[in-house]
Image: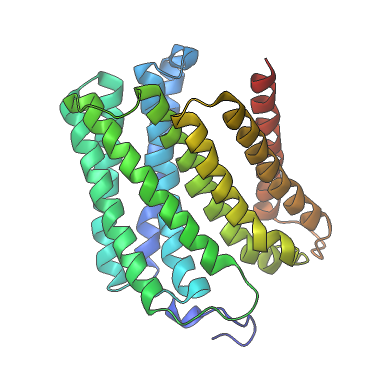
Length: 311
């Protein structure tokens, strides 16, 4: 363990080439999504247009997922002590499957080609299952967490949400590409898939890493212990109850839990901005300003969601 930062195992960091391949590939998917927007701005007229579905998955499965998994290859060993078995092999296989899967899925959704949708979904799910299995092996071998950090626990929550998102996604791919009979309506399953992907997987991962990254690299005070102790479990509980409300079509439960989730997400953004306001850095660098801008944008998006709920 590092003496400078107790609890962080820098010696377990995998070779740079393991995460770097994800970071180099991710911008290509962002570029593809941007080109689609440039040449066909009308695709955003509805969330259900083929172009909109393609753009969403170019960003989510192509750009964001690549960056998030690449980062996790570094974060899990260092922060949670969960060293990946054969990290270069896991990274190589996962990277190829994710890249091919995201490209095929986006093409299939944009063109309406069932075979590409099923192939892309299968490749993505296979790559994610390999990554999740390797993560579980690493976490099972990891020593018990030291200190008060909730990051290792909350990373487990995020990985569980990723597994659920993957299962929902492959179900949707089979429904669209093979006419697979769904136990619930397609729009309901899409909403479940989207919310568990963005807040369950993405939100929990962002929070879990922020508990360590913000104080360490942005030189801020630590997040309040009570806040980090309860934020992720409360978010998971609210997501589960919201899902029950959606599946059961219980309007009051959906509205109540949607409000709770908005409050929890807004609370995280405000808490982060408060800490950044107390940073001891004399001159904020680009990463600091980008993180702060992201929190402001997150709050703006929550206000937009709240406005849509009211109207």
